[in-house]
Image (cartoon, rainbow, N blue to C red; front, side, top):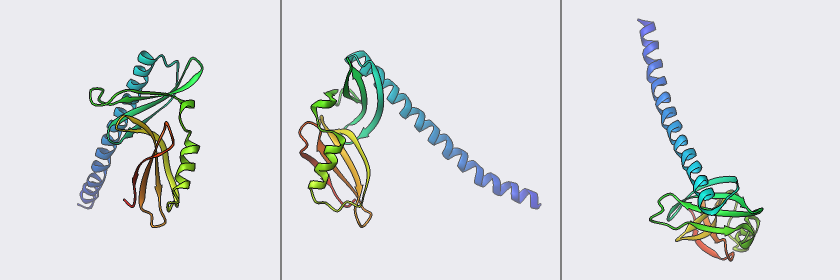
Length: 160
């Protein structure tokens, strides 16, 4: 009888773990597939010769941001997840501000920044931005978007 109880408890513990793993694995495969598809679109439509990275961004529209090279120059291509709802965006890396310059613009805002969580490219209303996510001293999440083209503030969401 004791063995049956132990086996039952193990099943109750193991089955949800296996279920969560299955869901996680399926979602990761979807993200990998979307990144691969975006890289192929960038290669076909914009002549990317070497893909350096692909990152996902979901804001007002969802994009896969492809970082690659074309003719020896670094280029970013924002590939929309749903092409009919958003446009492809293409920028030479040297035509916009860098990640470091975006962080400098954030520091000029004199906000309560305890720890930077992430800095990545995204887009708001078909305009490329650096999206900076950070924690403040009260451990609240904060989001600041800086326009890629000119370094001006695009959006600020504080104390989430």
